[in-house]
Amino acid sequence: MARSQPREGPGQSRGWREANLEKARAREAAYRAANRETRRAYMAAYKASHKDAARLYAWEATFGPDPRRPRPIAQDEWSPDC
Image (cartoon, rainbow, N blue to C red; front, side, top):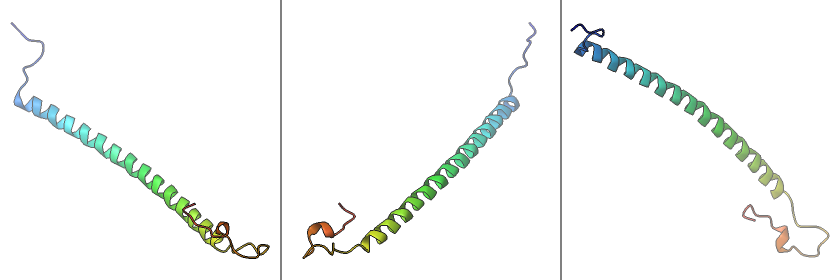
């Protein structure tokens, strides 16, 4: 009985395995590149927000007690924990 498909030999399965490994490597490289770009964008936004917050804290630290009050009260003391 003649077969329409040739028998699978060790060379053929090795070729498939190598092709699958190449596909997996390409998928992993694409994933890593996308992940690297996402992480880079996140860190840039994170650093920018902290820079803005530090600038705001420094600016608010220049505020002193209200000169219209005879003595300072707790509201005059600014804290980032509030």
